[in-house]
Length: 354
Figure 1: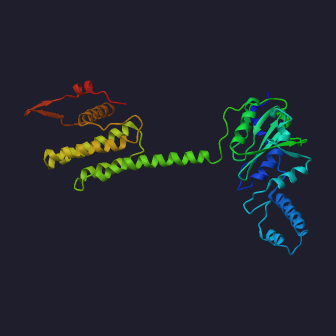
Figure 2: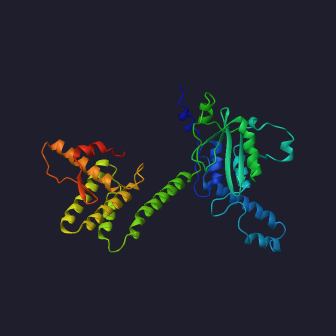
Figure 3: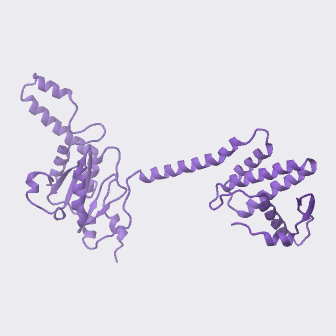
């Protein structure tokens, strides 16, 4: 059984290099590396010389002749562009002829486009080929990443669209040279699951995605500009969140939150309870900055949720080490009277958000 992908790979397709679209158009039409820029330049110089000799027949001292010598070549330029005369002479070597598709002479023949063998199209110094291989049509534009399959039904519509966009279309008449793709596709038709893209389109999308990611990161880190200069705990929390911004492990996230809260507990022994509130506030800001970079986490940890997670983490540590770790029970003050939440009550309350 034939591999459909290998059948597509058998099609010769030169991709765009510089402004050598005329060379790519000819080689894609002939299905091989038949012409080089040097070959086409030689044909262009020959055409220039023939034009010069015709102009000289009117007198080498004439104003028209001197003006002609001062003008640049009309058959090629330094960018790699070649005129229709160069392409026509190049195809004449292979016994091929160009006929203008929308000419009155050709249109009077009432020929269905699918009965032709190939077309070449030109618009604003860009040339590309449309050719039949086997019983299927392909757009061999050098600006595409690969050959594009065209159905028989769509071919006439595609040519009409090109004409509407300003393209000049030429019909290729004559016997094209034999090629591998013609032999393979003559046996088995191919199917194309995904159309090729324009060269550079993927790079542009990748660049756009990278710019969006950078903008998102700037928005997250821009929170640091809103931190009050005198609040060292908030600055420290933001610094920690920036260092660990790429960590996706939930356990690691919990460890950071516990570490910040434990630092706050030590400071509370040395200062007032208001300083402890600053530490918890810093922990919430750190959780918010880190959570902004994770999918599925859009809200900061509240003080109560942080406390429950911390208690659950200590319980797990006790079970794993099978040792008792002394820790002071967490209290909540309500109206001046203290009430104690035991670990069992907190386990019942705890439902960590995933």
